[in-house]
Amino acid sequence: MMKKIVLRDDEMPTQWYNVVPDLPNGVLPPLDPETKQPMGPEKLAAVFPMGLLEQEMSTERFIDIPEEVLEILKIWRPSPLVRATTLEKVLGTKAKIFFKNEAVSPVGSHKANSAVPQAYYNKREGVKRLTTETGAGQWGCALSLATSKFDLECKVYMVRVSFDQKPYRKSIMQTFGANVVASPSMETRTGRAILEKMPETHGSLGIAISEALEDASSREDTKYALGSVLNHVILHQSIIGLEAKKQMEIAGEYPDVIVGCCGGGSNFAGLASPYIPDYLNGRKIRFVGTEPASCPTLTAGRLAYDFGDVAGTTPLLYMYTLGHDFIPPGIHAGGLRYHGMSPIVSAMVREKIVEPVQLHQLECFEAGVLFAKAEGIIPAPETCHAIRGAIIEAMRNPEEPKTILFNFSGHGLIDMASYDRYFAGQLHDYAYPAEAIAQSMANLPKI
Image 1 (cartoon, rainbow, N blue to C red):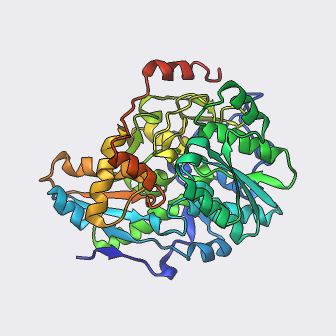
Image 2: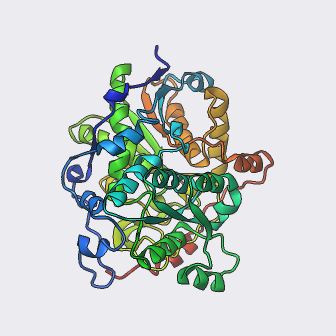
Image 3: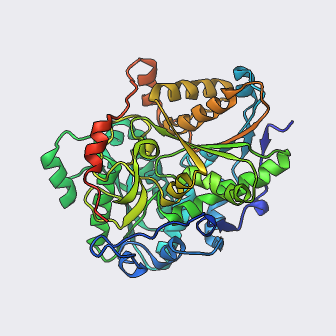
């Protein structure tokens, strides 16, 4: 039995898979917030390069990966597929549990899969500087790595609570040459207004996005990069699932259940989307998306057009949302603290292809510690949600032989302060009150 399956460099996918043309009933287009009409690429070109906008709106099922991007991805890709044999024994389950190890990237997570092509397309069109937001800091680290490879400046607005909780992520960004500030900051109109109203705020991804967009739109040489949610990001992350399909075939296995954690949707959709055509052709697969009970976008949100940011400057996206002014509590899975969900993942949930599940913080850390002891890799708090989901599936009926595949989206070696608090009993479960969600969703745009 093989413990680990690693593809050769020349077996790495050379095309991304675009799931949009295959989704039943499709994905509704973004709307112009001023006219409420479908938004064309002309307006979006102010903050995104045309190469990415073409991918965002593409109806092609496969899109070539540029050679320059492949060369950089080969630093860590193809990533390993690993059988979690010790975890299976510890659980006493007959399920086979596999994980795609995205922690092997230079920044320790899947985020670099999209950061590299985003930096490439911006560089190709003469952009000198990129702005972005980051929650837990993994996307900020990934983009700072990518911009250093293409000699671009990088400005990162990092959600205040993670800025304080995860100082070494700042250090990584600075090592790669990025300029990092806590969001909300005094550097933008949006940040100053929020600090005046809520000086003690933890911040949120919605606020940080507003700041990064405001910064990008104020300079001719600058564009904006987003680490999740948008179609082109899901496209870039499809390399995970494309590799996994080849590796599972080598292992002589096929997943009965695919599990991933859901924040904005990129790592989950990256693994799951290449399996969607098989599902639509009659293959029995369950897709399980796990999210925190403290930010229950898919399980308690509404499918509606909403802004992706607090200031209401983004296009209106048709997605599951808790409302754009929703500010989640400072749980330690910072990458899952986002009010909205990728329109692609939202469509998968709408069509009942994906089953969303909400999990509490403590059960996820417990699962992460169990996994670390069994398999020797400490998971990021976000990844703990996927591990917990996989364990639930394995133990649903321990005597039933089934094959589970989950995305190990990132390691937790820069998240040890979170583990310290867990071991000290300082973390608590938090279910976001329904009345607070209702209040946030009362401000959804009227479409």
